[in-house]
Length: 350
Image 1: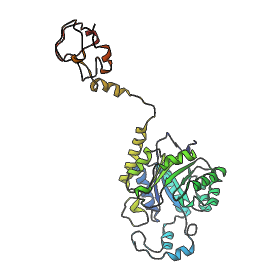
Image 2 (image 1 turned 90 degrees about the vertical axis):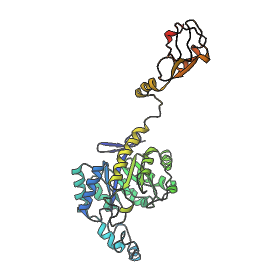
Image 3 (image 1 turned 90 degrees about the horizontal axis):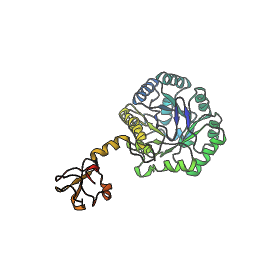
């Protein structure tokens, strides 16, 4: 399995989880808010921030704009679809400003691309990888164009069958893309727990032999941590400064407190997973001395008497003669007089 090589980091099995704070459109079209989100993600310990690179003309057709002019949820939708897309899109200049800011703050910049011109922009900005959104698993021309740039790819798999994932992966690999990582994803915001199927992480690993992560649209932190425990090497989680902000995704995003938990506890989970090799560490070996048991006698006995099963008990601490050595003790004579409750050493037995 080929790992992804980002500046200063390898991404894949056996590596600490790569945590992506998905800003998406939570900047609400405001570069200053975007920078505040970058600052917060860096403070939380995230490895990268991720944006979405689309424009009013590259993603949605005119007829769809015409069909979506009113929304009941005014907090999530401040106007028509066209008005919101126009406000939330980032220009090339804004992209460059945010990338420069990420470089200054020493946090990786990633973004989803939705059209060839955005692929070109991100390529010119020297992103460490292209992100392909779930909606474009079957957009083979876009996948081919992304592959032609020879960079690593993160491919989300929401709404996709195994066959569609296989086809998309083949297009990227045949087209010359760098290493590809798949992100298990459920494209519902938020999904019902019974629909998440985190065991698909192992399914994708086994089926395609590539690094697999999890793009998390759930509320809270538990499912991201569970995904790491099941082998996800990347966690992508929507990120906001305030869940009550106006905009599309703030309500389902992690706030800084939750992102800190995902970063800190996610890395703890990774370390705790450890090895498949069964070992007993030095601290536990030392603990044996206090917590295991040793042989004591139940009654006073004279030198030369032979120990019988009914004369023997085992109590803490775990020094001396151990319970699993009982066979070598029964019916052997004592080398000294002993009192009730005395601990016995091997030197006390003939």
